[in-house]
Length: 442
Image (cartoon, rainbow, N blue to C red):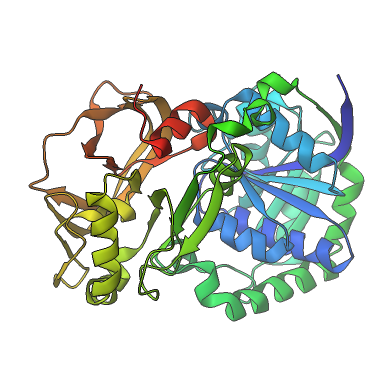
């Protein structure tokens, strides 16, 4: 097999909220300003951080997960990136060893060196102790050093650095600064495209701060990693194009519907589908299409406008009545219900393809990784939502949780409509996805 060597670094942390995305984005912008091609991967089923990182780097960001996507697919994505990139950055999820598989598992599988990003506010030598513990916890990972985030002063840096062993150097320190930090709200209901100008200021300020601190010297610690090609029959490149040749898939995409894995779109195109986009918010009519995909997003923030677009709702209903395939995921599922109550408690009439009401709730409801056992076959995905549905029909199945015996999300099938809170990762079962969009249950 062919190998391609490319410098790569995995940015991990002891926990969430340590500043991984802030550091990754600022580093990517610094390298972009120097004319480097930086390809970023985000661990786990995340839609929001990749938007931020894509803007910072100027390149598409790929979500990567060994369980959801499978080892061959992940291997192929790294191989493709290595052909183009001057540097591959991988941003981990949660803590370094959290989840199954964890960030450490992914780094170990592809032999990518790790750097620990740690918010060191409120501690000094203890930060070194935590870093040493993380680095020595497993023998199959290579931790090359510590990036001390929110470092208060030069003396603060010295105390931490002095406590680190020679085998685990201080790679860099990032000074405490409100100008470069990405506010938590950017990772919630506010998406990157809605605060683009503000993010640009923070990326540039972050890049300036890293440049002034000599952060670019971290490159000397980053060595090339060999990324191996895979055989054709292991990747999506081996999928017969004729599976969806002649099929046009219309995808909802606007402020209300944004949770779209680019890998899903790429797979549809690989299978021969023609992709057209439309806006349930702004367009009056559906484009001519054979199948419809209503992905997740934030319809609750635009429920009134969605409800008032009567022409679009009429077209969606007619599409449903014509017995054409529709996939509705999370926000798309809410759009298909009879009503949706927004965060203020106001109820709005939705498309009414399926009985039931959607109701927003203040706290998050995260159901994690699940398999969707559809009639077409098992498809892996995940759920993460802040709403609940009520008075819905009897589901045809429930998601199978990755690590828990309790039933997962309800899955509904009405005519050729498949609706659920689950976000599906299409490459996990390409044939099942093709059959779903063709309306051909196995």
